[in-house]
Length: 83
Image (cartoon, rainbow, N blue to C red; front, side, top):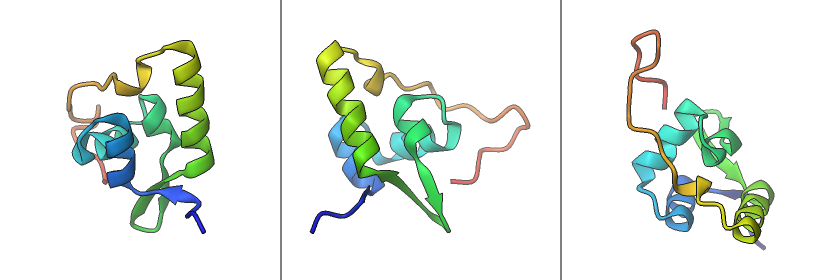
């Protein structure tokens, strides 16, 4: 049976990003991959159905938005996030 969620390492492999960049996207929530992240306790996971659908949309449109990552910066409040 296929798990209902992707782990950070799996999302990193799918997007050709580092695992750190995937966690950073989740923390910031400013990319498509980051906005799909769900926090479950201390874990961060990505719903498989939503990620798969995002990749289908990106593949059909030829959009490179999945790989565009902002540079690492602090939050507006000076903190570095909680991930």
